[in-house]
Image 1 (cartoon, rainbow, N blue to C red):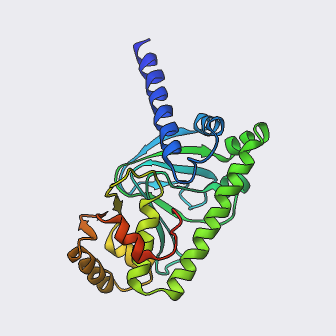
Image 2 (image 1 turned 135 degrees about the vertical axis):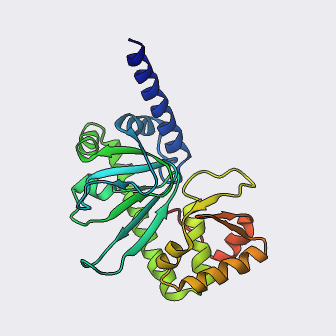
Length: 246
């Protein structure tokens, strides 16, 4: 009986954390409260260790994953034995896998926890059942997918046209702003400088130099697998046009 009670309390606590994370998310936070309640009820919490792989062993996946705390590194290898392509390291409030959960997309990716990470997870059957039973979810899902496409197009445009320091700042801001930030916040982004270099298709030495220059200017602070953004106002000025949350 005691163990059963602890399990119930634990699940209730997880649901509360998931609901709060959704409300603070730049992606989900604008949805109506009843929609957020429905999404939270569909989720289960998963706690993972650093480096632990998410999804199936062959890289195919049909789950929606929402980062409650921690970070997730997403990468692919275009061909067997080819160089790994790092697409993103996403943090609190961000998500991935929605397109697969809605339509069992054929593409593959490798997602691994970056540090100890808690995720809200919904399998495809629950997503599709929820959409059938609660059609209002479709508006939220279509909006999320449309914004994801815009982010992808923005990244392509940035990498083609902008100088390195602007691309770097825009990528850091996009990760940091995926969850609600209090006024004066100095958010910490979890990623390695090597992964940042791969995401920006730049040499590690160039990334290191750019970060050191910004650190000297008091814009950010680098640490072990972290980058803390110290002056959001100035960083947004460097970024130029609006940055979409990743």
